[in-house]
Image 1 (cartoon, rainbow, N blue to C red):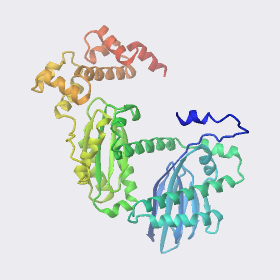
Image 2 (cartoon, rainbow, N blue to C red):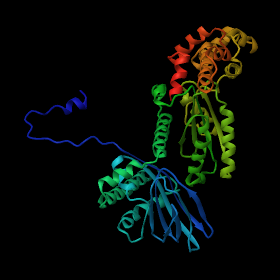
Image 3 (spheres, rainbow, N blue to C red):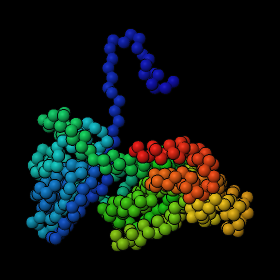
Image 4 (tube, helix red, strand yellow):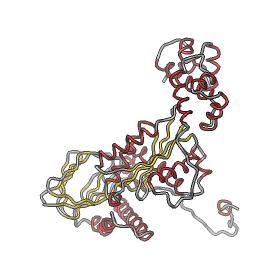
Length: 455
């Protein structure tokens, strides 16, 4: 019997009962760090979709928020609302140390109340500063320290929860109206929603890669963004001190930004490595080796550090992610704890060459499996088996999808007649083209063009 059916029992002889509504919210922290700087230091203008708590531990900081200057003395605490433009520099002190915490709350009520406070500076003797000070200083001590296992992990979480609870209690105690909180909540930047979606995907990837029993769940494509190919690689900076410094957050952001133009990416953070997973929805196999090598060089240039690369590979099924992950760790020399696994190599080179040929020759009505096999010096049966085993789809599926994809683009972007488009994408018979198009897209070419014109 499930707990829900049990909850419906016990009503006989009741004198009275009440219940609280179901509640679910999430709290995300990232980019938390402390930094000590000297005369001449500054941080350029920027904005982000996160709340920020900035606490000056010693010295003076000048923070300019949306053109308004705030002078933070020792012990001063500045709350920044999401989306505000801000920049900072050291003030009139020979050195300055600050602690910075970025966070997001996926809960309309709590988000609205805190956002309604706006960007505000709390002096060192303010009640909120005094309540948060012990936890902020505790987090500062935990920053970058050598992990001593569960105790430190729990200490970080406990302090973060106390900071959140104190901040929420303060914001709920303010005299602002419910309407002000709702208005502040409605101003959530679109970037905040996208950020939560990215964090959710990253958490899903981290859980799956760390769970030895996740194989069946990983095979469920509905859990991931739409894709034809999924690729994985890992990077590592050998210097262990790097992983306790703010640059590790920069490395993660740089990886995300670099891969975003190729598909939907998720970068999972390990203790001393980053693993990038790329979901690509194109029909051609993405050149992951090239992307990964470019990312490594970019990181070395931006971080001014040696970066090692562990290539995982490309697959057409998410169920192979675990094997690709193991291979990437092997490439970094971090896989000693895993049992020997089969070698998940990159997508078969022959299949990649065949797909590239389809991309360049799809306009030819005479393009067949036999002709392609002859070009690659293979038998048609062998090439057909390779297509199915490596991609999960036969040769004709790939050729049709490439042709129909190009036809959709021409229908949207040109005024060519349907029979002209049919010839341009490799169909000599317009009627056959129309049947193939409707089978793949669900509507006729003319109906597809009309629907796009209406949009």
